[in-house]
Image (tube, rainbow, N blue to C red; front, side, top):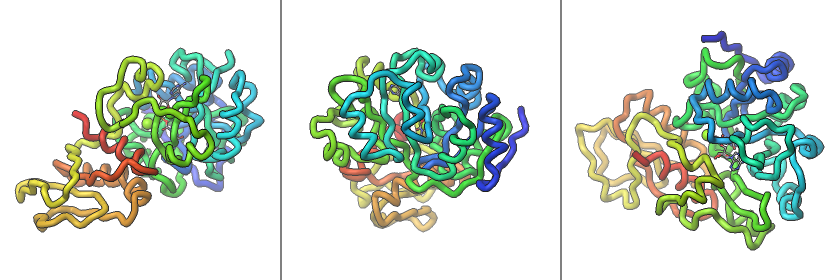
Length: 327
Ligand code: TXA
Ligand code: MG
């Protein structure tokens, strides 16, 4: 156990010192909270895997504060990659690019590419700038658990395991960045996230997806090697997650301590059912991980989640829901 220090957002210098000297600091971004380490320091990066209990074959995203910081991390940057940066940085788009030798294998899980993004969040940017180093950061949750969208959720999972937590606001999007591989001739979407496939298509009309329907069919070995994050359990609370299409058909039981999240009021629900209605897909995505954690705090047995159409942010939401519901 180590003592976790808490930092307010107007006091980032000490948190940045911890990062620079090889310690772990969790901080807010516009997507979810990240668990940061100096990306150029192998032993700091290894602490991330230990604190999270993360499998070492799952590479990390490197966060930078400006395009100027990119050059030393990556090799050739394609025209398509430049277009994507021009359009979506800072923002919830992670680009996989050819890596330079300076990036340690511990960050990239031995791949010859590195994932990079500039977060659209003033606190994150200031922390990175003050630290003076690129910051490797996965989502700040124990591996397999729902991502942390509040500093309290970070503390729940990582108190005593990391050096610092920046106490920012709850995150704006609540779902992770979109991961796009721009290291090959044909741009490929690897993980749905805050920027939709339809929006990416406006810039890269021939972008392909790794898997046509992420919520069906198992992934092939080839897909798993291009997007290692798909190999592992993700986003799962202790409660059982059940996806429902037609909310009128849910087999409600009076015995069960059940929770429900979705867009429509469930019919014939038992009185004790905890219901969380969202007025948009954006709100549903924003609230999902926090709702999973609330369900666990209330010893829920089951969380029923309404399916949504896989369009726009709905694709990312369905990806997280599907993976949360896998046994
Ligand atoms: O919004 C986000 O992306 C948040 C915030 C903190 O930035 N971070 C995040 O990190 O979600 P993490 O570690 O939970 O997810 C990173 C994803 C994983 O699916 C990983 O496999 C993929 O990015 N990834 C990282 N480097 C890669 C690479 N070189 N090639 C392919 N996929 C990569
Ligand atoms: Mg994660």
